[in-house]
Amino acid sequence: MQEAFVITLFSIIGTVILGSLFIAILILFPRLIRRTGAAAKGMHGRSLILGVVNLAFFVILSIALSSIGERVASTVLQVLALILFSVLLVGVGLGLAGMALIMGEQLAPDRSEVQQIAAGSVLLILSSLTPFLGWFLLLPYLCFRGVGGLVLGIFRRKALDEVQDPDMDE
Image (cartoon, rainbow, N blue to C red):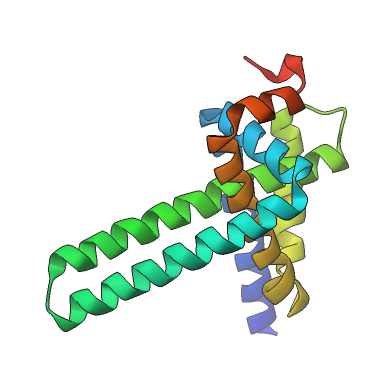
């Protein structure tokens, strides 16, 4: 009984923390998150494949750098691997914020962006907590698609500006 309470408490606290993080990311980087969401929404397959390729490449590269750095006792390679892994985590966070915005737009189309990303964050987090289906299918799918949308949002600005509404620009 006590374990269920602790798990529920951590789930609630984690939802509030990650939801707040996604709201802060939207406030700090509104154009990037809008472009990420537009790319992930407008180019489903391309963003998914691009996310899989990028995440696989950077995870393998950071593991390889860390392993080589450990074998040759090179702190430079290990620090480089840590920096690369940190950049990867930032990319996943930005991509998930874009996915939360997409989900929030579907849930509450008439609300403000902050309310949309808050609703999308709650939906994203709680659905990702679903045993097995959320852990091993939904969350990786959202991460892959979000990172792919982020890459497309960064490098395909002109194409995405045509997809976006003119009132979204600041």
